[in-house]
Image (cartoon, rainbow, N blue to C red; front, side, top):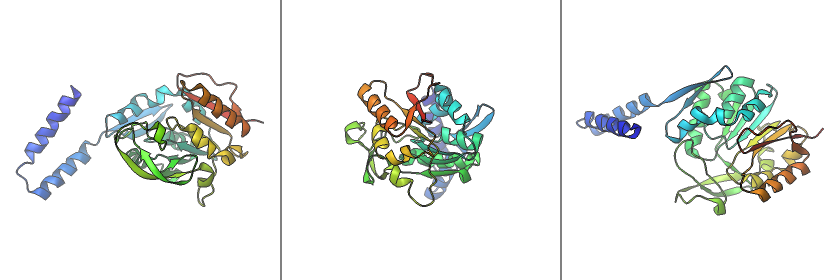
Length: 268
């Protein structure tokens, strides 16, 4: 029914502008598009967050994003304004926004999809946290080089993007991107070293971690939250072993919240 209403509205607007000249029609349609841009205000632990939701897929984030990962929110609640949070696979920025707005943490938000990244930047503006967040439209992996990014969808808020040809979803759509080892990225002038890192990259977490051994071994890094694919037991074991080698161990007070995330903390 919602799709029918939307199509009806499109037809009405097009009919209403049918007799306009080409450029006036385009101008009117652009203004209507801007005026209809949907945004949603979500209250999380008393913090008001405004999210732009221009596509169907983007509706998921204000509707379910914070509820589906309560452990992530609780983890971010422990950040301070001296912490630096790397949000790898930031999507439209829900956890980036919460870390910046609720805890005043400095955030480096990395999202390779140009479609979601555009809305991520817009969300920073809408929430007044642009000064705290460095949004980067690039990929991270085991190598630093230019490579194809295979998109799961071109819709804002969608998931399933990958730089791994073996893991790609057959959408028939790809764009070129720059991929960085996190060890290389954090050595760039102007980027702070992280104290906390979240990695949610839809199946190539092990590649990201392989390119981040120095970062993960740095005593300044306090914790790392990594998404585990529940069906991939060898992959989970490989990720856990790598993190332990770097001096991180599974948090003893971690409780399953229904997500695939696991929190590793610095051994003391």
